[in-house]
Image (cartoon, rainbow, N blue to C red):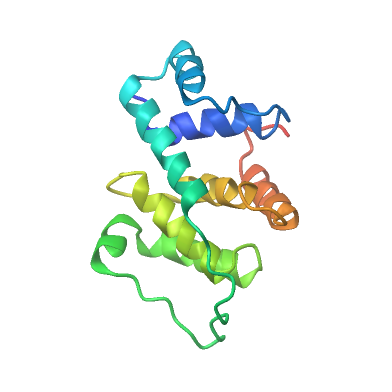
Length: 158
């Protein structure tokens, strides 16, 4: 079975976010734990780099929020990797108040950092949850997103 960077991230997220357990802050120990779980070295390194990018990317919250008439234009790379349906889903998340425009930009950045040639809505859901979980004060938005993810997944018991 070929694991992706997102598989490694989802494993980490499910292991630590729901369990209330703090992840090892030592990158080497975390790498060893992931190798024991069966993930490949390349995917582990890419996932750890992805997490580093999530933790070092700052969201400009001081910027004036875009007005209701503002439209987010996607460049060619973003359009190639994030199709119309996925862009529409992110817009929907903004419209229902789960994502702010700066958070949307972070989600787009982290989606592109996955290195996948195409993005699907399930990937967006998990990246949104990881982004919201990583930010203080986003508990309500995270809970709303969690409800959306698990309400739409009949195989998952929560």
